[in-house]
Image (cartoon, one colour):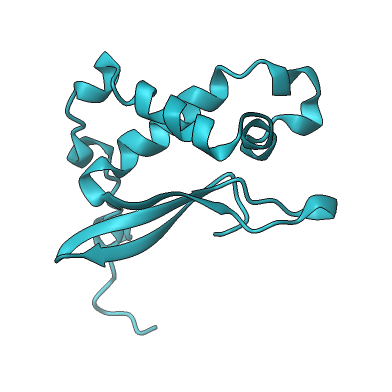
Length: 125
């Protein structure tokens, strides 16, 4: 979790469920631990913060010139964490971030019992 482009670590602060958001981790020849982007984000704001990270990253054309550099790691190295946070804050001021997200519509629940074939009551396993 601390080595991916965006990672989340569950936290509770003042009885509020939330997450620490980390970015910029890496593996391979340039292995590094991720850096803290947000120390605490309430759970209700997690998806918007993650989307803002992706929106900021997706606008960075510099890293797309070399396919091996299309990672948040290279963007943050180039911009600096403070500048990336500033861009994230600006992104979260956009109209898209003011809309409510219906989390229930995003939930996938697999009904294993309903999907399972009927069992013949006369047979034994």
